Length: 236
Image (tube, rainbow, N blue to C red; front, top):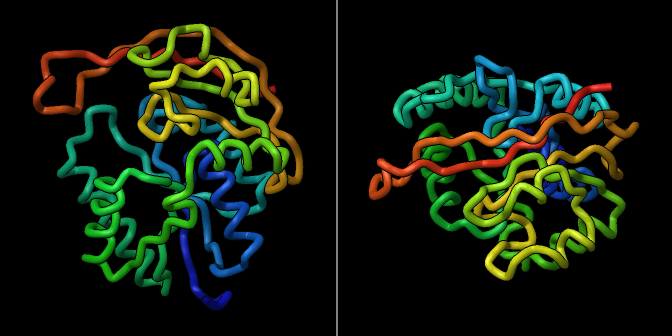
């Protein structure tokens, strides 16, 4: 592929995004126009991760790439979500951008969904980490000098003590066997604050640990709630 392959990079602020972006920047296969992130319009936090917009901005500044944001309501329906995404992506396509890059590793249904939605607009989805074994992805992330912290954990898989832990060899050793080393099934989410893609580390302090419940997205379990432990990060 050539450097003039214009692309957007779907940035979550977490480790898989960081490692994937590092690979893209090293290989120079794509010309990344900007990072793209969705946030909760009310609390200005990254969707699912719960990280503040201020820290997200700090990441983009340190990576030295522009950042584009899409603000969504907490209870946004799939129909509205698709509509808003189509509006954004249509403008992107009009600007000559033909690729959208993701850090997904093995969730086949999610990949098919992304590809189907993007193909309607003439945009190609790319997955540079796809098919790699997640234990090796985790080791590569750590070995390359990246540093991250767990900011959200699914209480069905991990207890409160994991929220706020640093993502390192010690953490990987403590993860239950049912938990993927990269949290690819949504068991946990991270915030990356240092590594080879950053000019400077992102400075923060650990805040409080809070518990929140949400309605299950699974139609078969709509009457059940899913609980998450969040570690708040405070910009310094």
